[in-house]
Image (cartoon, rainbow, N blue to C red; front, side):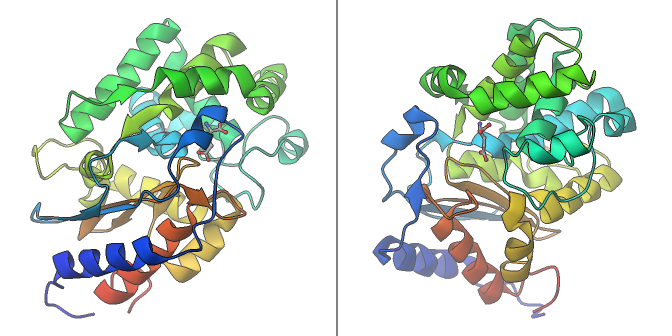
Length: 313
Ligand code: GLU
């Protein structure tokens, strides 16, 4: 790997220019009706290096629905609350199944495979809800996001949360199924309400890359100097992002990009190059596994141009 810092600004500028020109954009998610209204031509890429220098291009200040990317941060919060006891409620293995699959859950007696598939993230949310009113739990998650990004303007898009609440029947099924095994402690409505709201957090790529810097720097946010998690916990969250962050596309993402990352059906991907950079990309069109199509291609190009893949150049 080159010891010279690559010229990130020109790499990011070229990638954004290339991606804006492409016709193969994938398909915007429609199963949450409100997400279907997003402009498929949007594209943004932000890279924040270890010194805090920002390379950004495209619509990088436009907020979008972070959806499942929020699961990285709720996992961080829940681990902070109950530590390793969390792993009694959720596993740490890749699922090899779609994000909202119910089949595996039956075989594994209501214990979800990992914290990033929907069932696992709902179980993690339930941990955060325990001992709180749903409103307090939502406030706690939002405050945590604002603290991480050092930005008090971050908000929840109520229209997206309500849209998913009206149509999220599959998640209702997953939650009820887990409840029948005692994996969910709180009323299903409470836990799902909080889950839908944290998925509906709106953030720009710039805010997201800032919020995730602690995972690129051994648990400490270099901007604030504050430690968010221990180096060991940061390493483990990164391992889960690498193995489980893209549902049944996780192997392909590791193969092509080689960085820990988490996708969301809003078309965002948050990724980190350990010790080097925090990265956020947004392109609303998805591939067949529900991951951002151009987002993945942009990250593949970025990893190749910088030599940042954790597996070598
Ligand atoms: N809120 C979405 C759901 O539960 C998140 C899915 C995703 O972003 O992958 O279906």
